[in-house]
Image (cartoon, rainbow, N blue to C red; front, side, top):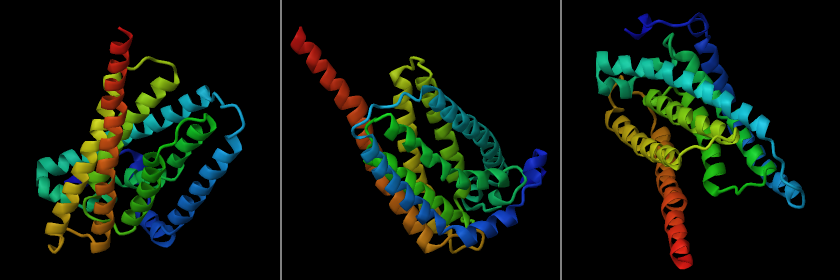
Length: 266
C-alpha cells in the first residue's frame, strides 16, 4: 500500500540500502561524536568564562529556522506514511512496521532523521557562546538521542516510524519557537508550556511503543532486539522525570515565586 503513496523523485531515488550499510559500519562513531561534544562543551565554558557573551542573533535565527523547516517537512512526510499505515493496516501494524526505512515516501526521512542528530549538537554552541545556563537535560538529551538513533537505524527496528514521526513533530514546534524567540518576537508563554507538554507526552508514548514492541517482538513481523528495547526504555524512562522537573521549575515554581514577590511588594 505505502509503496504507492506519492513520493518526490529525490525520495524514490534515495539509496536506503547504502544508508543502512553505512550505519551498520559506522554507527560506533556516534560515541566519538558524543565524547567530542562533551569535551567541547567543557572547553567552551572555560573559553567563555572571562569573556563577554556573544549576541549571535542572526546566526541563531538562521540555524533555528533551518531546523524548523527540516522538522516541519519531516513531520509531513513521515506523518503521511504513518497515517496511511494506521488507516489501512491498523495501529498494531504501525508499531511493528519496518518498511518505514525503505518505503519511497519515508526512507529518505528516516535516514535524514538519524543523521541530523549529529548536527543538532550545534544547538549547544549557541548556549555556550551566549553564556546561557546549560542544564543537564540539554546535553544529556542530545547525546542519548544521537546514540539511540544511530543504534536503532542500523537494525531497522520496529517502532522507529513512531519514534521519528513524534520527534519530528515536537521539533517542528520547538525550533519554530526558537526561531521566533531569536528574532525578537514575543511568543505567548503558553506556547513554551505546550512544547514541554508535548515532550513529556512523547516520552510516555515512546515507552508505550517499546512496551508493545516487547509484547509482540516474538511475532515474525515485529522485529526488534532485547538490547534495543532495554536501551530505549532506559532512555525514555530517564527523560520523563527530567522533563517533568523542567516543567515544574520553569512554569509552576517560577510562577509561584513571581506571585509571592508581587504579594510582598503589595
